[in-house]
Length: 299
Ligand code: NAI
View 1: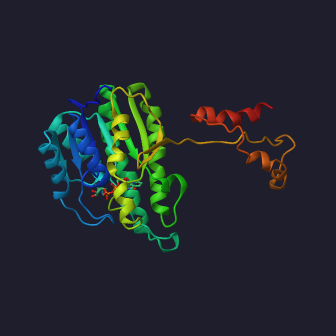
View 2: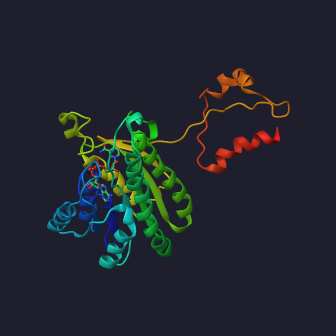
View 3: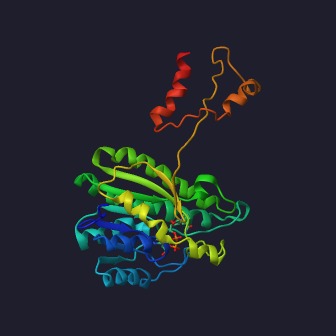
C-alpha cells in the first residue's frame, strides 16, 4: 500500500486546536503537509478567544518534524485564514471545514442569538473560508475540500434546531460545490463524524467517549483529500471504526391525473405507492431527480 503523502501541499484545517480538527492537523502534518492550524480558541458555546489553543497544535506538529503555522481568526473571517496560508506557504490545496460550536436548546427556548451564532460559525464560516480558497483552487486546477456535517443535521435531534439546520446547510453547499468543482479537479465531500470531544462530553459517558477517538475519523478525511482520490459529492458517517456512505432514497412514487385535476382527497388512493420504498430510486444529481417530475408532463 502506497503511503498517502501531502508533500508541498498546503492544508487549512479550521477549528484545529481541539478534538477532530487537532487530530486531522497532526495526521496531515505527519504526512508532509504544510498545515494552517486555525482556531479562535473560544468555548464550545462560542464565547471568548485564546491563541494558545492553535499554538499548542502547531508546536506538536513541529515537534514531530512537520511544518505548520497558526491562525487565530474566526472562520467568519475566512479570507484572513486563507491569507495566512498564502503568506506562509503561497498556495492552498486542501480545506477541511471543521470549526464548530453548540448552542443546544429546545426550539421553544431558542433565542435569535443562539440561532444566529450557530449559523455564523457553521454556515457563514464554512462559506467564507471556502469562498476565499475557491479561486485559488480553480486557478491551479486542483483542490480537496471536506465539510463537517452531523447526524443531527441528517436525521434531526432534540434540542438542536439551529445546529441541525446549519449542519445540513453545509451538505447543501458541498453538493453544489462538488458539481461546480468537477471540471477543475476540485473534489468536495462531507463527513458526519462521531467522536469524543468537549462538544460531546456532556452528552455521553466517559467510558464511551474514550472509545470514540477522533483518530478513528481522521483517516477518512485524509483519504478524501488525497490527490489520487477522485471521490466527490460523497456523504459519509464515520466514528468508532465504522465508515459508511449515505445517500438520498426516493420511492417509485405515483402520478396523479393532471388532466382531470386532483385534490388532497385524491392522494389517499395512491398513498401506499407514494410511500413504498420497494425498488427505491437513488437519484445521483438534480437532473436525474427531476426526470421523474418531467416524465409526468409526457404522460
Ligand atoms: P471541539 O470543540 O473539540 O473542536 C472545535 C474547535 O473549533 C475548537 O477548538 C474551537 O475553538 C474551534 N472553533 C469554534 N468556533 C470557531 C470559529 N468561529 N473560528 C475558528 N475556530 C472555531 O469539537 P469537535 O467535536 O472536535 O467538533 C469538530 C466539528 O465536528 C464541529 O464542526 C462539530 O460540529 C462537528 N461534529 C462533531 C461531532 C462529535 O461527535 N464530536 C458530531 C458531529 C459533528
